[in-house]
Length: 611
Image 1 (cartoon, one colour):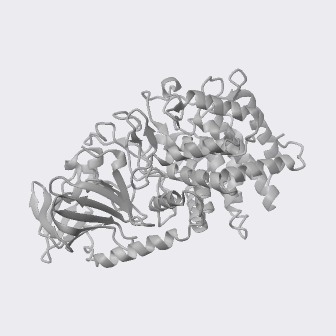
Image 2 (spheres, helix red, strand yellow; image 1 turned 90 degrees about the vertical axis):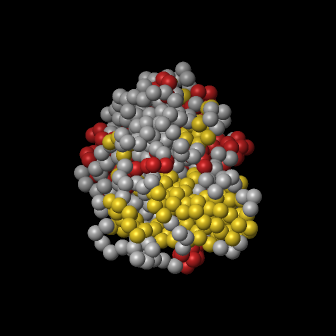
Image 3 (tube, rainbow, N blue to C red; image 1 turned 135 degrees about the vertical axis):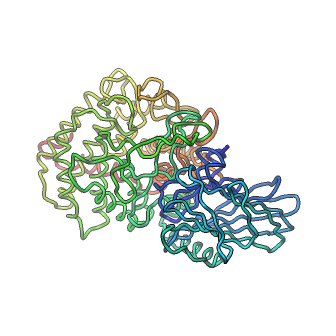
């Protein structure tokens, strides 16, 4: 059985990533990209679906950490006879992807065992394994090739490769697993100690650019390193998570493939990178977005592949039983076929804010923005599937309409603030129409709150974004009423659910954990409303949910007191960075957007401006 989600740690090379459990088992790895087929799939099945375990024989006490300011994982095993540190990392890629594992004996002597089970095609295909004259082990299946090099004896056993060896004080056993193409020359060996040193230097140099120096700086740095690890270096895209089908409900069906890039994450990701000093990464993310959505506006998708691929057809993997029995296991994501109006707001928001850091290139992509708004003008009154990509019927989700307002608002602001040319008067008229529509149909006077969708009596955590995107100021009584309703109906043991799945008719069985980003949004609202002590208390609780190496999943399951959903989740770490920035600086996203709202209120109002 795979380990608990919080018992995994991440290693990666900014093109793919692996999950390593506390017991030294590498249970998930897709090669050569995040969204490639897995060659180690035990995470979603069992050991026979592929894993690579390296650990002491028998019982051991386990402690682990990342080397400071890096993605190099160190797992310390202490036995009755000695202590071994397992060092796992993936060097930043310059050619073939590789995993390096170094087992170093720090004290005494320790009997070790290695168990390598390679299974290509998501745990289904057993490779043909041969040994080369130089001792390297070569595993081939179709186009795939893996080469294992090590300085300890290995042998084949029951369609896997095993080794037992003893390490004594000062000894190091080295393992290098390199991926290549079966029809090309095999990858050559690396100097493992040199790779370790260079990888350490690479990560330390990257994180040294972080400009945040306030409280919880270590948490910010760890989240930024995680975001960098989830970025696809060739294109600048950032995947939502390196995993698929880790369930939002233990044993449930809310299992989705997150190894792709979502437009809904765009603005918050841009702000997290911008405010931490990573302007280059922010611009590369913006450029990925523009390339991916290029084309006809009516073909805009909510999610794309790491290089901008559109064909992400969803299918189920029948030979994998799912994480601890949670099936189905899904590859691809059917959200590509959904209408989600909020993505128009996300895109135009990103393009607008990116102009603030590219002062010499502010005209860039404004023609694309105009095209998107021309299309949105035709469809904004339609129902959609909303930010949570429900599998039930389309509705007039309040958040979707708010983000349609954001789309036109940011177009107007780009004209007003940067001197660009566009149909500002038309956009002001539409912006006012949307604002009036939301305030009349998306607000329930009896509840004194905005509601999940027009005509409903339910609230949704996405409503917390209303003041964060500048639709209404945080001082508006309707915002206070909405926060009260969310506290009343969506808070579970101090954390925020997305919505009440028992009442939502979202096309799936009820039940899921608290969505962590939503709890960060509540902390942001507390800060804006002057409830700073509550904001800091909620932040402390959220930071307490991180696992022992500082990682967060998508959700937290209160009943089982453990992380749930795909892991690690970029959106959770983005929200962490933004909330800390909001609470402890005057330049966070919530501050900036609130200031924008204030500036609009103070400006002389054009004829059709929002009151």
